[in-house]
Length: 337
Image (cartoon, rainbow, N blue to C red):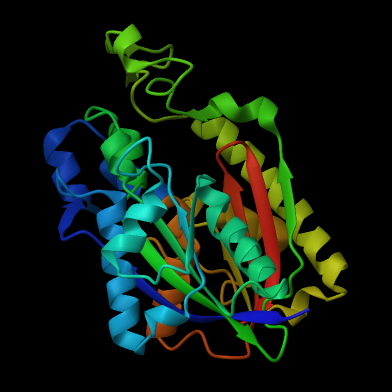
């Protein structure tokens, strides 16, 4: 059984920045300061009209290759995680494969797992390497979620941002990625984070896409992203301690053995609530979303890259990684970075 590790991460952010001050101009009566305190987000990057998750993913990969002199011919698999993509078919991974000139012997696969996507991607990559299929896997998480938000949905527009991360996972002589993950699903809660229209269940041509006002006074449209914030909060804050305890037990580790807790960067209030519940010291609880917002499947690699750039993440540190979200789904692992 071969082992693997995270070798390098590179990130791409769209050029356009939407600040909270910009949102305040659109909605003068919106309590933006209160929302900023709760979310921890001051600004976020937003894709251009003709910029897609594949475009962002390609730029993240190009940056990875340039910064770390990566030999594309050594990559055996490309995993592309996104809720978006250029077309319904073909898979966006195949388009990205062409865009970044990966070799013909490289497999390419799409998957859509939202906020737990990075964990699923790590697990898939580790399994491919462990089975001897390849020595290097390129995991690209890329979300253009702002394209799915209703323009009048001021709440979600303050939370989410667009970004892509390219993570190179390589074979290693030591087990830095443990190969051991915990995953879980509660599919009964799937309607709490959803875009209802646009696929086979509710094709766009069957519906007129009218706006409506829900029972909380929010303007909505079934063609746009919807999130039940209170349900997501309750789910995450209750599930996180259970997942952390399960991981520590699985790895036969103590709480103090963890150098950093890197959860999916949903928003500040969720992360701080998890921290209080688990009594995580402030120095170990990662909150890195002020200038990017919630970038869905990219939040964990974005946070890791930011920590690395600030000198707060060093090789050999023990990290607990955990994601929670759409589905509802959850997943986690403990790694040596």
